[in-house]
Image (cartoon, rainbow, N blue to C red):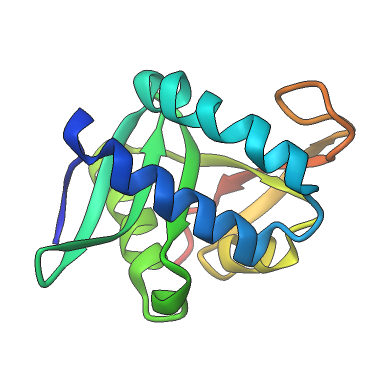
Length: 145
């Protein structure tokens, strides 16, 4: 079930974020994960619209969006590959008309995931949003399904 996440969900969401990052972002050093965690919790969560995916009353994934971009998508590692990320992504495409996402180039699983959902690379940046040397691929959804 997909619902809007509230501030009360933030402690669970940040733990999902951390476990998911550790499972998928092997290019990030431990120090950077520790540096990002409070930023995600105290700043980024405040500035995006968050939707959570629950199963058996347990949050197992979430997506955060700005008015025109998927800003974050994280799934509990044990639940990856079960269609949760796809359901959340299609939800924001269909309900919120979100068409863009930025993905770390060093995260080939995420790049492949979005390409399977008909996102195409439209440009590339050498630096991430924090100005660090983690290149970003900028993708846009193509309407062909």
